[in-house]
Structure formats: structure tokens, C-alpha cells
Image (cartoon, rainbow, N blue to C red):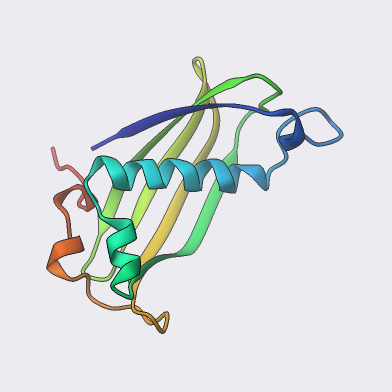
Length: 133
């Protein structure tokens, strides 16, 4: 499953060099991951209400090209790996045919105390698992 979403770079996301500040990519990626969860019918609000969460344990970002004000960015997200408690999502930010950034995000399913726990069946949706060829 690959989820695609777009956003337009806003002026306040840019730094003094005129390109998107690196820290703003974390917001872009978070927005896209939430869209991915919605696309796979993962009930995130339900998980939170039940005392669970999906915590980000690690983010690796490779910045390839700068993005600028009014650029239309496409973010593609897909699961790369999944275990019983955690997994990895790959995300690519592109502008037209240019790869702007690529990220690998490691997540963990946690209980109300923030401790990693096995994903309960109602939230262990098929979309979390990478497609195999």
C-alpha cells in the first residue's frame, strides 16, 4: 500500500536561504503518515481513546534537493517492515520528478505508560504489513 498526499510550501516554513527549513520536513512526514493510517483504516483516535499510541522511535532523513515557497510537494508513504510491536515506514517527498527528501521512520505501538506492547488485533490492520512481490 502506497499513500500519496500533496501540500504546498508556505512562506513561514522557509528559512533565511529561501528554502524549506529542515525541521519542517518532520511536520510534512507526520501529516503524510497520518494520511497513510487513515487510508489503511487504522483507527488512530480509537487507539488513543483506548490508551494506546503509535510513537516514533527514529527518523532518518536524507535531504536531496531544496524546496521553495509555493512548491507543490507530493509525499509517498508505505510500510517497509512490521513486527508484532513496531515497524518501519518509508517516505519520499518529491517535486514534479525531483526527489526532495527520503525518510525512514521507525514506529512502536505503546500502552498508556509509553511502553511498547504487542498490537491488539483491532489495530493490527493488514495495511501495516509491507506488500510482498
